[in-house]
Every structure is written in structure tokens, then in C-alpha cells.
View 1: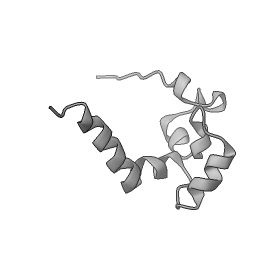
View 2: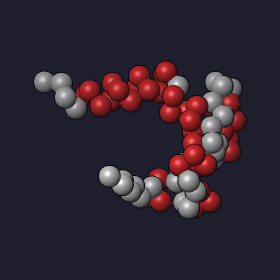
View 3: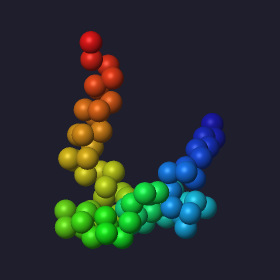
View 4: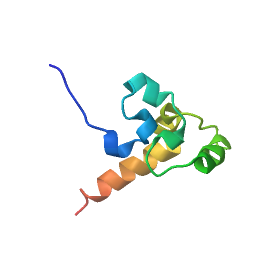
Amino acid sequence: MAVSIELGKALDKAYENSTLDEVLSAPPSALAGLTEKHDELLAGMGIKTLRDLGSNKYFATAGVLVALSGKVG
């Protein structure tokens, strides 16, 4: 089954027509709203690509906690 996702609004215009692998290899500033300054700050944490950002244990844990917060109660 083919799956299609529209990520245009989540990405910087320069990456809107990129492949998934190209996007994951791009710097964090490929996300709409992040800048090269964010790239520099994140690089200090060893995060140089979107793949690094998405697989970082701290960001992943925070994302899970936020998702769980909607299920509590």
C-alpha cells in the first residue's frame, strides 16, 4: 500500500520537494521556523541533522511524554 504525506508546511521552502532521505540528512533548520542559529545550538549537543534530532533520546522521551499526557486520566 502506498502512503503519501504532505509535509510542505512543516519544512523550509528549500526542502519542500526533497526526498525523505534528503530531508532527514538536512540540518534542523530544514524545519519551518528553525534557523541557522538553531543549527549551531543543536550542533553543540551533537545534533547536526533532522535524523539526529528525531533519534535523540532526550527529544524522543519528551515527545513520548507529551503524547502520553493526552492519555492520562
